[in-house]
Image (cartoon, rainbow, N blue to C red):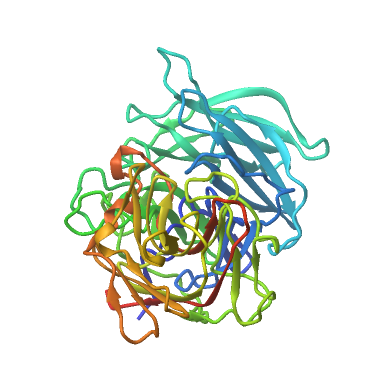
Length: 529
């Protein structure tokens, strides 16, 4: 029996897949937005088993995300390979919430997928979702959607293309508008391929919400005109809002060693019964595809809905060791699965060597900060899981806090934190922010001045979140009634974000006294779903 691809293949917040094959190795690059290091690359040899291989943008010299709005920063990386060199394009979105979009499109290269990567070359800023096409004649072409902020104009005004000169490191020649999309609108995410004399343009349409879809067009000429598949779209969930996957779109194609075709795409898994609440964020799935006799691409299983499982190619199984559930911080540096917000890991605020066997965080700015937060986190990847830690921390005032946070962005989070106040001394309780409105669960604030350590735990079960605390890791006290996991979703409060929920350890010192917090371990344990 053939191996089965079980979707999503990369769970939790890993959107906008860019899919390539180099020899027997398959790679998918995904967006990271404001989470640092930026651009995550996943690796497989059989399309069934995937693991996180590396992250590309690791230094502020490569990209500076401080001050960027939430759900801005690193959008839609495009990974490609030509003549022994890997190419990676990405957009650094500096502003996104006004009529204007300040967009920095960059190109970096490396001879090895693990790096080192060249210094970024800034190419343009006319739109986002850049893609580099390597034509058979050796010429290279940059594609991106074009953003038009003018009134009485469509913001998504078409897919444009311009030649890239690798010797000069810049774009050259005229800008060609090659495709304006279907009446569905919101045409973005261009990917260009050549097959049997046709140039095939794969685009995302309908916006990133429930109307998201994948559309294909083709032309005999590179610069067009491109005709749309008369049976478009290739894939969508827009017509079935009860389907287990939603928001399917942003496709990227790869051809296997045996000439089979597969498409990676993003999708969401809403909490059952909530419609669109998807706190795990946009995930990556893979579909098997076939070409029709008249040269159009269809899903191999038929219809427009993505498959929950798909036949894998006939390749030797290649599983990877899973990440351990518990990290006791016994290593000298932070690696997978951790990320920080907007800034690199730096000994000034995070250390594993200051006190061996512990993670030390130095308190800095608040959870509302877009600049210098002291937070390390990992995507939440399951609807049923337990996340726990043990903290040593002695705050002097309410301006100093540390603990365990379930975080979507600066407007939406739940935070079980140790702090201090004038009545209880050292105190422990839950604070929250929903759609930008801060609140404290005052009835659950308890004095912990006699505790030497603080064991903190969050349990997620479907839509419910419960926080617990303990002085010894054995006798636990519930710190809240059930909280809504759906709050930590792209669509909550109408904000239209693009990321997903994280479990994180953090510390704040709003008095700027650099109070230190020490974490003994971090455990993420999935339950049966």
